Length: 170
Ligand SMILES: [Zn+2]
Ligand SMILES: [Zn+2]
Image 1 (cartoon, rainbow, N blue to C red):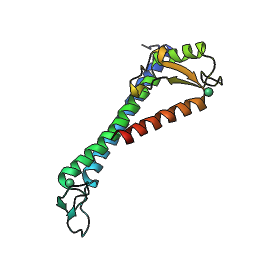
Image 2 (image 1 turned 60 degrees about the horizontal axis):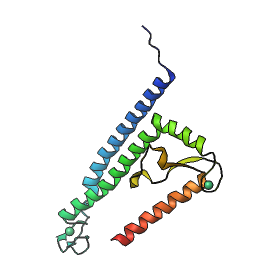
Image 3 (image 1 turned 180 degrees about the vertical axis):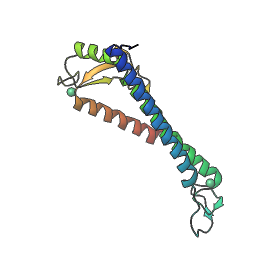
Image 4 (image 1 turned 90 degrees about the vertical axis):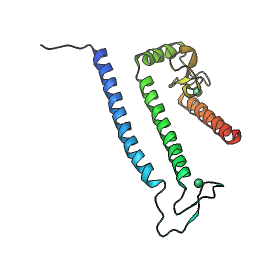
């Protein structure tokens, strides 16, 4: 028996399918990454004489870049950073493919027909408080229409502010 789908059903299946492929690709990447991290971060240096570990202030002698303890630490730091980036990408992908996001986009564009900063074209919908800083991803109060340029400017200001915090916070 033939089955029929509405356009919306087939669209949401397509989104699910894309999400699945995305996840498989990330798993493959993590598998390769784990392998590389294990073997590359502290591979033996050819003909190296023993020297102290490259970690600042660590006196342990080794013929590799790091002592065992600091090699493990370096691996887990690299891994954490890369895996966090992927987790964020996965979340973003889910968010911007959701039906609620599509509806909110339409609503924001209808209520804000111009860039709220410069009055230019409403090219993009911006999270007023960025999602990664705890802003609501799918609430209309946290959304505004911006032109491409104003959006870029806001994003780069936010990135600079965060970088500044990281540098001076230490
Ligand atoms: Zn060390
Ligand atoms: Zn603008």
